[in-house]
Image 1 (spheres, one colour):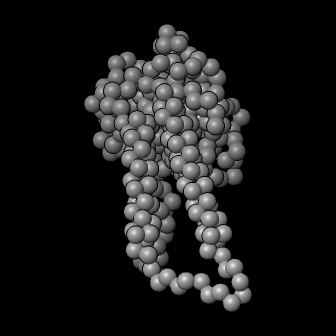
Image 2 (cartoon, rainbow, N blue to C red):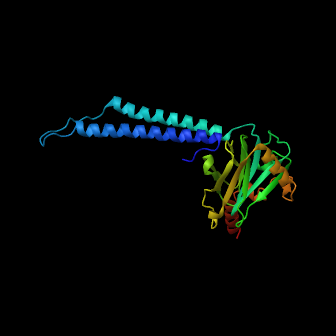
Image 3 (cartoon, helix red, strand yellow):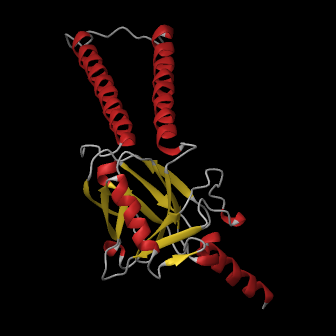
Length: 264
């Protein structure tokens, strides 16, 4: 696993390592019991008929209860880590991320953040009154700039097909789905340059859906957003793909085709 570059990545790595350690210990125990039973209760002569056991109630209870306990433990730890990654009511920054065929758009908020704004698609309420954005192209890999030691929330949009937004060094990725807004957050702990990409096969040029991540000081991040806001790449709301981001486009088109066929 890569060395985590975010606070949330530490929790993800701990969950991953704990799950593998538990699975390994369980596997070793099961293998040991299998080999012991094969050796201990082997047939020692051709005439011998092993003892026939129809059932063993204590053993059956153990084999039922033990997996249930394991599932409960795994589930509780997974929910704990999921809450760490997904649910921070007061992030320091919010960036609206759009995955489009075949690149990325990053919308940075300008001015004061409204922490009460949510990510509901149809209310047109966003965390900032103004945005500055950068758009990648097939020939220009965009750069996502993040401040170190601050929590940044990503709201994820797609106007066309399912993409997947992830940075290996952050130890998290998430689907970007038309018609809904997924989100997660990161708190980078190390200044540096990282690589990001789309993890979902999204079309012919899926391999070009790359982006770079620059983790900088908080002062440099503020200066970057201010500088970007001085360019023409500004708008009153984030660029999220228009009405296509509000619906599952493929399903809508298919439904329309069926409706037209029925009408005919």
